[in-house]
Length: 214
Image 1 (cartoon, rainbow, N blue to C red):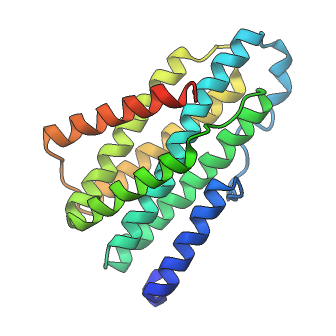
Image 2: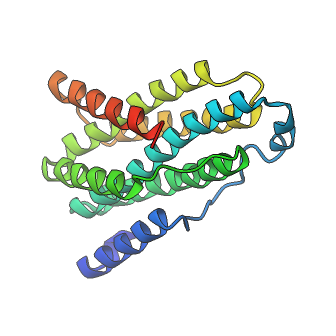
């Protein structure tokens, strides 16, 4: 698919998707997982709504970063097969972006005010990963997805049990992240050094803590 795109085409399409992501205009290729459950939100207390909205805001920021990472990694590889794998992961992450943004609105919350900053930082990291070579870039993808999967499990533990709509969205996201990580490993991703994994965890902690409030 991407093998027929010129470097300029790739750059322009990447810029277009970045604008769609930051302007809140991404499109979902799959149905909203919580369509049958959002009507039960009236049973949530204000405190439960606020808790779920804050957690979903963090998840939305994670999807902003995922878009930037995979777009940058796709742009930075010369292998059309890997580029298509990154684009496919970004497409599914775009579904997550739409779902989390919709759920935040249903809960009466808002998305992070720092989304352009999150996107720019993640895009730069994605380009660095790509320049490190395909095995390390894929390893970075696999490690990112493993950490996100753990992060989502923590959110399920903290999310109100009564909020079935948010929970089913997070569960679907978690399944998708596991599949993306396995795809990266199957394509030749290598395990990252421990200092790199620890640095990723530290950066994620800063992002999630800040996004919860801003």
